[in-house]
Image 1 (cartoon, rainbow, N blue to C red):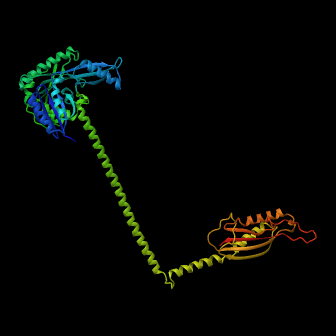
Image 2: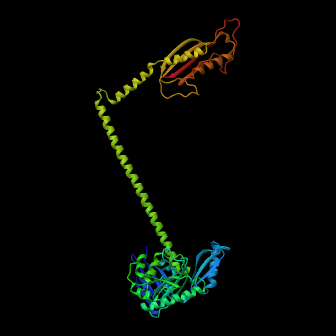
Image 3: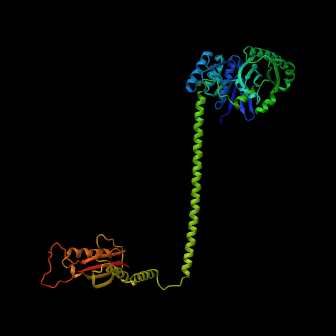
Length: 503
């Protein structure tokens, strides 16, 4: 974060304060002449990277209460700008503070309009700031920051008296909100002169507020006077409570300590305290127009981009750290898996060493096992296939078995195109010769249908393949179908099937 500095401007000079850990500390004072402006330009050149805030304590200021219809957004902004232009024509240093909505009627919004009516008083200082391309956060008036000196539960109406190099300021608060303020130059800055001026100005302020009907005559106005302990006795002697004013002398050193400012004060002038209050809690409304705060906007954009880049960089570091942890975890898992594999290899080798020695090489032993598996597969022979055949013959009692030849083969000679032949044998194969009933001699269609149903029943078992080698009727297209000779003895129709099943 850049260093922050506050410029305290009155009618005769400008004081520079540096904001540090202990609060505001005075650095330099510049008179409102050519020599002072030259020194101020040199001071700005030495602190070009700082963020500056300006606090004005001038006589030429005005406070007005105005009511506007309740509105929001751009409509409200237009109404406020119109009111400011009407009441503070010719100065760009004007603002509006909202005092809430009225409870009765149209519930209009009440605004306190503040204006610094002598813009030429600020022009030389802002020109120097602009020429040096200084980051200006804003311009505030001293009454705006005096709310930080109010007690936690302020009275309904309070008059606060404070002293600066510019003079004695009387600020009136109503309901804890700023209502009016006035600066009176001090002809005698001594403790006695300040006490006498405070008593006289408080009486004048009471009469002025009563004339505006802001206070009631029969109710004493609470008046707090901020004074140095060395001037407290003189202040109590001059400022005595009466029917109109109820004075309370506030210790300047104790008030500064409560605000977090650790600084030594020579008298009741409290510019350092007011600059500290501004830097600690800047009011949201300020007087500087957008042109005077252009470098501040650019600085905020740059700061936001830098912050975003830091966040992206931090996110990248976190992501890299996360990925690094994952890599370390994977390396640990890989090391553990390799160690387990070595342990398994060791156990496997140990078990191999424990086995009885076989006078065969690994290749011969593998070939022997393969041959054993082949013999074991052939051991069951055609028994499962014959059982399946017997079940099909039971299902078709019209078919009579004549001859059956079986064998075990490694590869089938012919497999139906619709069937899927598993890779590799062996297969149990049966050549089946059978005949149909003699009553079906003339029924060629029935013969073919019965043989097809029989073959389909046999092929229903898994890993079974059926092929009709010789049908009961020769259906080749090159031959003619002839009926049996009536004078010869009829013979039953015969057919041959090849039945195979994987062992």
